[in-house]
Image 1: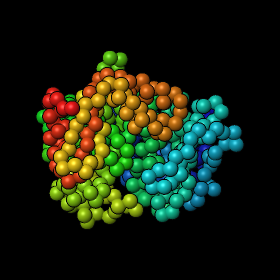
Image 2 (image 1 turned 90 degrees about the vertical axis):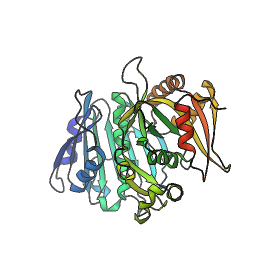
Image 3 (image 1 turned 135 degrees about the vertical axis):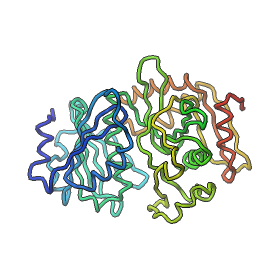
Image 4 (image 1 turned 180 degrees about the horizontal axis):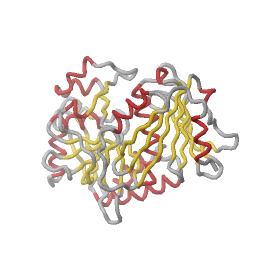
Length: 362
């Protein structure tokens, strides 16, 4: 078993001064250590938005250590290991999941893909709430890659112990009530970010455009969506449709032509932390001139939730089982709709508003 003493070997002969700072993720304290000031600046952007909670649910320790090259990583993959999954990220980076034979330690290995990312290895001890990410120096990575794939994925996996489950979806709240939330679930390119940002421009709140956490805080309570980051990524189609995003035209684009900004830059006051889920939407882009919503049965809603959400984000069988039970409860909690979004229409937010107000479609 990998213990805390072994994790501490990452700090032997450390290149640079050891820095530390305490953050919060909802009601979990996150104590971070690093040897690179850029890492702290990035964590400030990611976790600085969460206030100190009135009551703590738990705490984790997250160390992020930078080295000149991956051969200097003190912790390498063990000889005795089980390869559990391999996935190709949207950046084309290969991410490989491993675990130790006792299933107590998880490894996330990112293969180098210049100029997007260098090699990194994240080690997670679930029983001790300890995480370690070893990086080649940050200049080998695009900043958005480290935030969205390395740091957030590591934190997301660790938060499962406290009832959080990562979900590839956007989440919005109505302008009239932040406790009226909708989850927009779909693959990359389905239109969920464009639709969510259109809602934001019309006064809605936003928890995330691509990745949120699901959580049932207590038995019998409603399942809520919880923000994991207030950074949004915007495609050119969104810029063309919503004039409020015009300021992003001058922002640098990544290799997929995406531009990044915070929710508050889209509309001040739009950021939300959590909301009960009252509506489930499965958007897709349509060639029709107007958008259209079609009501789904509970069985069909659950099937689409499983198809879209039960993904490689939950590489371990225990996580898959836990999320399946949560999705089953969610299909009972909130009605589901397929939402065909007309590419050049602005009517999506109005349809969602009508659905949450109780109007009938389909």
